[in-house]
Amino acid sequence: MTVTKIHRNSRRTLLRQMAGISIGLPLTSWSASTAWAQAQPADKNAKTPLTTTFSPEDDQFLDDLEHKIFMYFWEQANPQTGLIKDRCNTTIVDTSVVASIASTGFGLSAICIAEKRGFVPYADARLRVIATLDFLWKKLPTHRGFFYHFANINTGERIWDSEVSSVDTAMLLCGILTCRQHFTRDRDIVQLAHAIFDRVDWTWLSEDTALLPHGWTPEFGFLPYKWDYYSELMMIYLLGMGSFTHPLRPEAWSAWKRTTFEYDGLKYIGSFAPLFVHQYSQAWFDFRHKRDKYADYFQNSSVATEVHRRFCVELNKYFPDYSDDLWGITASDSDKGYVIWGGPPAMGPIDGTVVPAAPGGSLPFLPEATMRVLKNIKSRYPQAWGRYGFVDAFNPLKKWYDTDIVGIDAGIMMLMAENARTGFVWDTFMKNPEAQRGMANAGFKSYTPAAPSS
Image: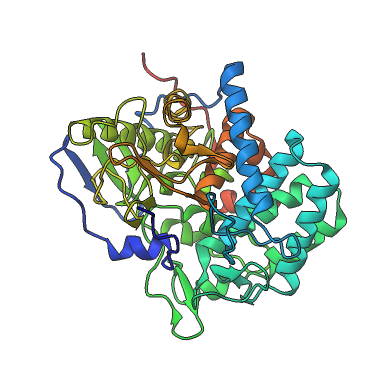
C-alpha cells in the first residue's frame, strides 16, 4: 500500500480539525492545567546536559545523515528559483512541482551547514543562495511581505489556493537570516536578506489582536485560527518582535497560553499536539542558558522529549515494536495517508508507525536516547534508509515503509543534528540583531541552570 502523497492542509489546519480528539488508551495518568501566560517554570525536572560529546562512530553516523539530507535540499530544488519541493518520492523519478516555503527555509540553512562541512564548494553554495534570495525578493508572490505556503517550484505561482502562512514564512525567514550571517561578507546576500526580512509587515498581522493569525487568503481574509497555545509559534513572535521596520509589541509574547502538563511525575509546558511543536523554533533560536519569566524552553523541550519517550515505551503493550530502542511519533505519513499523531495524550490513531524525525529533531534535548533510536533504525530496518537518509515514516508491524521524504521532517533532523554536534545553526542565527532584539523584548535573560539532582 502506498501513502497519499499530497496533503493540501497544513499541519496546523489538521491539528485544529482534531482539537479535543484523542484516542483513549489506558496509559499512565497525565494531567494538564491551563493558565493564560502564567504557567509554572517547567525546568525543574530537566536533566539533559547543554553540551554533547559524541563518539567518533556516532559523529560519523550524523555526518552521513546530514550529508544525505543535504542532497535532498540540493537535488530536489529548482536551481533557478531556489524553491525546494515539499516532498519527494525516492523510488521514482519525481516530477512533482509543489514547493513549500518552509522546506526552502530549512534548505537555505542546510546549504550553510553543507558549505561549512565541505559537502558543497563555497562558490556553488553562494550562487544557489543568491539565486534563491533574488527570486524570493523579485518574483515569488507575497502579501505584506508574507509568502504563500505552497508554490510552483518552477514559476513561484501559488498552488492549491494555499494561505499566506505566518509560520511557514517564519521558517523561511529563519533560513534567510542564517544565510545572511553565514555569508556575512557577501554584500549581495546580505542586502537581499535585509530587504526580504524588512519587507514583512508584522503590524498588519497583529492589527486587531496581540494573538497572531495562522494566515490569510485573498478570497477570505484572515484565517479564523490564532497562535494562542504553546507550539512552534515562538519563532513567529520572536521574529516579529525583533523587526526594526514593522515590529510586534512586546506584550504579544505574553498573549499566548502556556499549559502545564504532567506525566509520570514530569512537568512541562506543552499542548495537545505532536512532538514537533517542541522542536521547530529551537532549530534556530538558541534557548540554552536563557529563560523568560515563564520557563527555560530548552530544558522544557528536554522534559517533553523524555515524556514522549516514556509514553511510547508504555505503548509497547499495544504495539510491540515500540521500545527504548525504537520510539518516536510526530506528524507524518502513514500507510493510510498523512496523520497528525503523538502524545500524551494519545492522538492519531496510533498504529505502531515510527517517525525518525521525532527522535531526530530532538537530538540536542535527549542525545543518548535519540541516537540509540536512529542507529537502531538504520541497522535493523534498512528499508527505512536510503539516498536522502530516513524515509518519513515506517511501520514494522505492518511491514510498511514510506517512499517519501518530507522536506521539513528531513530538515529538522539535519539542523538539530548539527546543533547537537557543534551548535552551528544556533551560533550563526543568533548573531542576527533581529534574533537578539526579539529575545530581549520577550524578556529573556541568561542564567545558570541548577545542577541536576543525583
